[in-house]
Image (cartoon, rainbow, N blue to C red):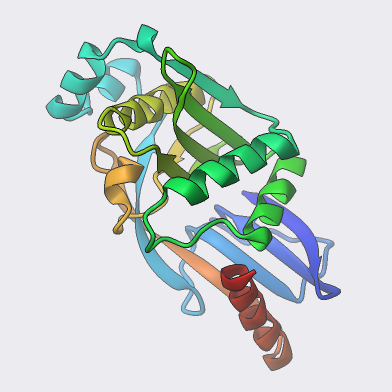
Length: 239
């Protein structure tokens, strides 16, 4: 579990990722923002996502890949590409990703605004943000995949590709290399971030895994703080 303490309009707020059981905290938050909580709650919105067990033995890990995915991965020349993991990104590296993402995403998807950018900085300051990108042999960036990680779980937050025919395969290759990286680092779960309209770019159907239900949203201590939580949600969409 990952917990980040912050203030929103001077109100103590917790950002909580991957919670599967109640944990006591000395920080007395008035508003708690949950992301992909495993423990069910009627006060949170449910969502389906795909989890891959990264710590299964290597033979099982490989055998669980669909044949179509294997064909793409093992005939692709990794030497044509450069995989760049950035485990402690600078402000400018995060801005580079923000610009790339906002320029290349589908228009129906919300852009990374100032509020979301600040959230990325906050995750980075807690050593919980990992940015990865793939470049071709001319050093052109083809795509990014960005994660929140707590040492055990890793959740895909954002993914974006440049509008080239090869970018879909390079995105698949970047996803595969990231999964191997997290596996080697000792992570247990790779969370694709959801089963939704973005599933194809998330690659959630290419690597096996299991569909699970997770819960996200705000829980507030009182009516007033619930209004503050709604204001925060509105702010994240608009600013």
